[in-house]
Image 1 (cartoon, rainbow, N blue to C red):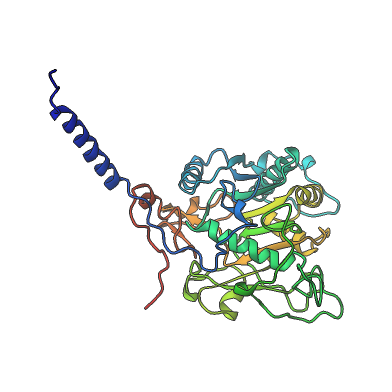
Image 2 (image 1 turned 90 degrees about the vertical axis):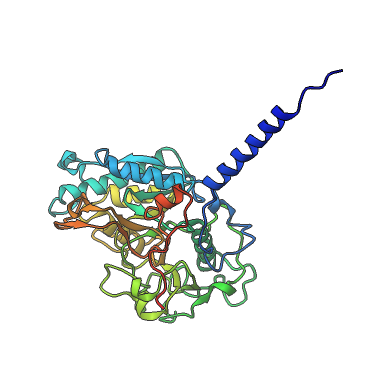
Length: 391
């Protein structure tokens, strides 16, 4: 019997091997920085934080249909981060008639850009109620985040448990924070910080990886204060964590009148606490229960302040009319920050004036920004730390 020569087979196999080696060279896996420090390796009760909607049932992004540049940027960033979301159309405030604005006392009509933002966020909140979603993360279209976002959210979830979940074995109280759910006349003005590396054992959450008792998780903001010592409503406890995803102090940024984090803690410190004086509604999570409350307190009561201010009132139990106190948690620094693209400054916002001139692209505070590193991620190159340690 004649045998066929092996040379063609050998050549084909060799060609396949060479092709695979070339592909491996061209498509190297993304080289990520060190993971967020302090992560719980087991993640037993927070594993849903690592899914494509970050532990929420849905993610919505509020964006004007005309800002196709923002649509492109958010779509790409989410794809590079394995995040699924839906756009909610933003609103031109000029299209909102006075008859659609709740008024119970005399006050001026908000600016059209402010009204448009107010209505756009309420449309997203309305969608949560309409679809009967258990929870949703709502973002604005210029949000940016660290490539290690899921590790950061995992740590935030564990901190949230410590601040709001009942203790597994209560000895001196039901909660680790003696001022939770609200301070009493006998409560101290401040309480000891909770160390992230030694968090108390708490009851396992049954409704969300972030806990069972929260109304709002304010994850993206431009500024926040720690709860005021003389406050009568907001719990005082904080969870502190040494976190390498936080840049050194000289890189911290806020629009608040003072930077509590920078003034009271050292570099690479993250603090999780209850909301006080929040500014900018860049990213926040809500539940079905709190979405209904938000529609009532912000949608059906006077539209007499920007949306982020009414959200602050909702969290603090302040405002005119009063929006009622609700259980809101946040972290400093913010996990989501505003990304400023390269180009004319005047296009940075559809609400406020950012002046004239040309700027380079920038995201404050985020060390390994997805938007700043998009090209490197797509090309398999090593990504860059926007705020490396000095020295």
